[in-house]
Length: 289
Image 1 (cartoon, rainbow, N blue to C red):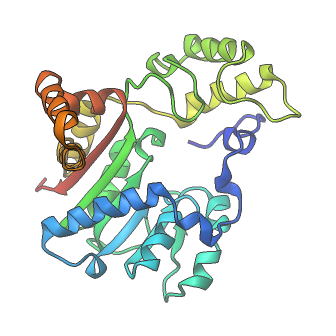
Image 2: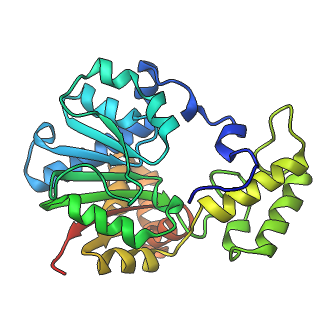
């Protein structure tokens, strides 16, 4: 959603590095490595080499993951709604020249400039919580995915304790409106949340964060997200990746630590707890409408 007020944008006054020009160092991050491992697992399940897959990073920011994939020999592209972020990733066009721009803008109609069924994998990392009209995005993802393609989406859980962008506890649980905005402004004035830049008062920062929460973050339950995507032809599996992560963790443990973890997994619904209170990671596949 486009902001129409005269307030500064939250990203611009919160120290967000994504508006800085991309550098090669920015490609080698733990986040990119973790995403790469997820893609390797998906490629293995599909029985294909990862370098044979065409990948789209939907909501790519400056293109950090696009550049990482290109460095691995993957034909990767990215799309984004923020023109300033695309400009910040201009380095990639020089590093990995292609006949098609590596990073491009989503159209004003929500459409992406690629043909139907063009991609084998679409990654939407920390995107869904910023989408007001998720059903429209899901429809476009469905159009872009090949018949055997899959969607990898990761986003903050609806009921995680600390909101991950502006770092306030519990206020994102509240419905949008006057109460939520008043609580955000109060907590920021009391010294909580992302601190303002040196030239801004906490009162003003509270207003900036309140507007960001109102206009640019949209937290939904997994049931809601799954239903919206299913109605547009993409069935989400919320258990596959968390189960893989638990299995990998078990492989790294031994002795008493392994026994304790196995016991904990039997006593507690670890996957459900992660999906509701930490971070969701889901794999989506197309089904017939």
